[in-house]
Image 1 (cartoon, rainbow, N blue to C red):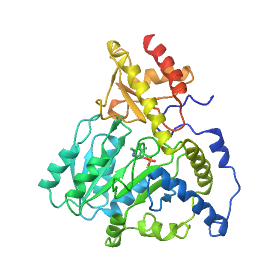
Image 2 (image 1 turned 45 degrees about the vertical axis):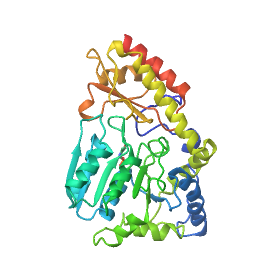
Image 3 (image 1 turned 180 degrees about the horizontal axis):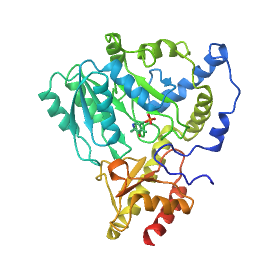
Image 4 (image 1 turned 120 degrees about the horizontal axis):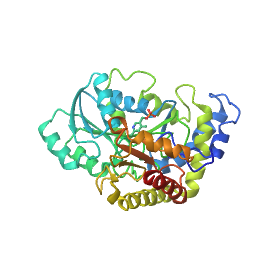
Length: 360
Ligand SMILES: *Cc1c(COP(=O)(O)O)cnc(C)c1O
């Protein structure tokens, strides 16, 4: 398959140069070379997360750090903002780790507003942690996490745990300036890396919570990540080949700049929205409302003469890959992952092919 045609909202297309970087030979993970590699990764990772804190790199998919967020930072009662499949997963992880969970739920495609959260926190003074998914990959909705962090912190000793798996690297995220207590992402979405790494930043507020938790476990203990990363070490065997890919991709990101990457994603999203708007008379619509749309993924609802599986299959015959709607939206929607290293020109080619499929 030629490059520029794989628009799944995860895993995303990986540049051939990045795939090739993984072929470098192994090094001992307790030696000087490994420390040099870990040290070299930190400055570009900190630029990516807009933080002066160290950036943790876990050998797991993003769900691993979602579990870490709960186990380390949520004391007893969690408020989960639920507006799609991944935010639902965050609530499920909290419950599965023995936390009391309450939810503020809105229909798929919508977002929970900061005002709704402020109201709920006034009614529920026992809540000590809030979970949110920044960019809901299942619906294409984007939650304003800056405003949210404000109301969460106004409520007192409450921490905000942010899944920004399709945010970081594609949508603006200011870990420090917005005081995101814990924010995480995965390698295979907006960062356009192969799956298998999770990345996260913990503020001192998150570490203070971890220090008070008796059962943090071992593999996802944030205090272990912290004590190791400051020595440029890893608590256990790192996913070395993926770190080589990460090093190469961070160089590419630095060349483009993080702000340049946000801008490119914004352009791709706007192009997609305009294209859908131009087909409103033919029954196409964007699931998420204006003002709450992700720059990395768009869920498009289909007219009744098309289904998600049929459209994705017809596109595949034309050499393009996109996603069907997620879960319960599988039949009635499609999703375009306009994220990672894609360009507006590549997106235009996809939209042209999609138009042909829909007009058949
Ligand atoms: C993909 C995704 C996840 C899960 O990531 P895994 O890497 O599969 O564990 C979590 N949250 C969001 C928003 C995602 O898009």
